[in-house]
Length: 268
Image 1 (cartoon, rainbow, N blue to C red):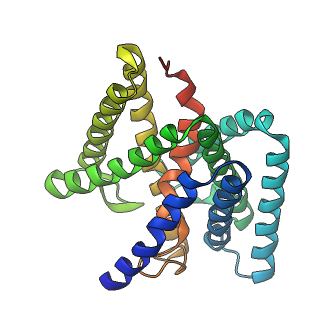
Image 2: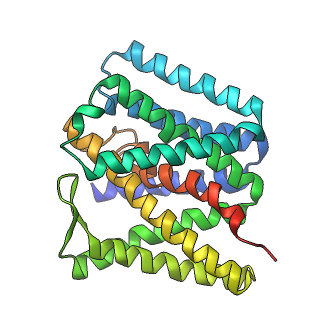
Image 3: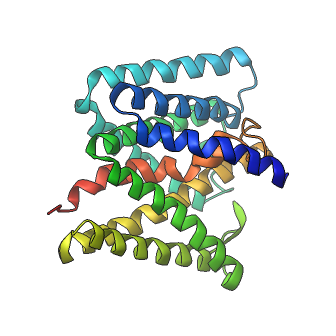
């Protein structure tokens, strides 16, 4: 298993980095759309859709929506990011009330609708950040990775109080705090690097804390859906790593929220 994980990471990481930071405009939008569409295929499985024809129809529907959003340009981006933010508030309610409120979303149709406000704003967020400059895209990616690493080590060292035992028994509040400390440090370093000043750095820290918590929620949401479906991974598309959703679950919440909030940071 470890050998397979290393082999997959060896070709996947350079490909993703080249796509995210080497492409621009239409090529970048297409690259990120392919990632989101792969996640869409997996999401239809999490929704409980078994028929390949129905899953394909959902995939095509998502692709059509992406084309329409791309043609609409920046006019529809802000509105969809707000829709995504409101959707994640609903997701928060469902995750924190699992399994009591399972009846709200257990119908496959509801989970398919949920996928729209999870995946579409994520794709829009990626494109908004690419248009704003690769520095902001780099920051949100480092934020999610730092949160994961900080949570992992803090949780292993001090984890006592369970965060959401019915959803993801391995996560602890101490791990969340460790992730937040790691991302605050990242924000402070970034503020100095980009010469954001005291006000800009302070706002970036506040935004970072909110987005860090959102990234945890993104992870918990997928864990909840997988637990409900009684599956370990969203797919076996990436040998040794599970599926695409297993790699981007935190980003589905962090990217659109950061794309919505980053303009608040004054850039000198």
